[in-house]
Image (tube, rainbow, N blue to C red):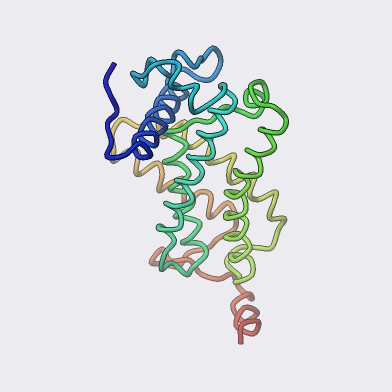
Amino acid sequence: MPRISAASNAAQRENTKRAILDSFGRLLYTRGLPGLTMTDVARNAEIGRTAVYNYFADMGELLVAYAMDETDKFLKDLEEGLEGITNPIDKLAVYIRLEIERLSVHHMPPGPAMRSVLSPESFARLGKHVSELQRVLSQILSESMTQGYIPTADIASMAKLVHGSLAASADRTDEAPDAAARQQHIDSTIRFIQMGLGAQFDADGNPSRLDGRREQFLSAVS
């Protein structure tokens, strides 16, 4: 069994934990959650099974840790991607692109499968953490409506429709024959969702405010 070496005990513990989470993520993507065991995770990470239990008491705890870790990484990438972007429709494009890329690599189990291995407390904790993604998207949609780039509608319902479209798109992205086709599919999905929400674009492809909403927005911020 290979040793995971680091400069300090704390760093070594972090490296081992990272190896466990990465192993779990690979197995979750290739095999799915049903039937997956701690032994499988340990073997795939090339560490002892008891080492896994030093970090996670059971599969439920490991699943929560993995989901929270992936959410944290996505939010960090999203924060970096949104830096310097002011137009909410362009922000939406960044969100969609990162979500498709995340979902095409890290497929989380559906809700019923999650409930089967999580305690009610763990499921609620996970839901509260993952809801941060919904909050970010809701904020972008709210900005888009307030500034007059998309029609006013129920934000919660629209966010659910966006996430549903993203999940379906991520599955099709996996089938792209090459990087260029994959990129084209993502670009098409971005524009499809934007226009589905009611966004409009000028001749150069830049977002434009809806008729009658530009003056309303300028009056509100003046």
